[in-house]
Image (cartoon, rainbow, N blue to C red; front, side):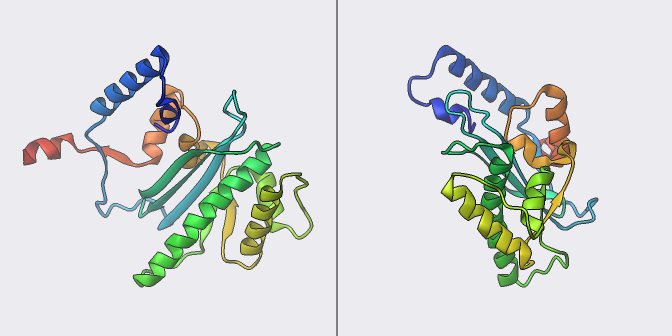
Length: 210
């Protein structure tokens, strides 16, 4: 949907075909749902993931960003967007994705405080780029960039990480759930992505109720 929405004006036959395929997919998966049933398998209560696809738009060379938040193993918030500027490295793209994620992450932390909900765990965002994590966690490393907005995001993130407001941990790309919000996945990876989202088929329950 994020990609299709970029071609709302004067769509080509290819875009119409892709839209039709999207509708067919939605009909075929209309019984997949996010179900909170008390069966918590993950050790962590609140999980945050951030990812980017570097320069994936072949016409503008803008990068795509995505994040995903889950509570008790079920998705509660996600976003998939295309950037508006060109970054010069995957590290810069990851930094911008992390900055986007961190702002919403802080919102959720404050929301939990307002409703007096304490997950009793360190506030952590997962990222699959080790260079980005080194820049944020080490004392000396600094990303050299000509883009002022990237440097501002970098400085703000380092400040939040260094003060302990946010922790950033590495996970392998294969375990990065936010990866599915940054690019089109082949069939096998998409199947794994569905598992990572913990979507379940509730068709039997719906039919019984109806």
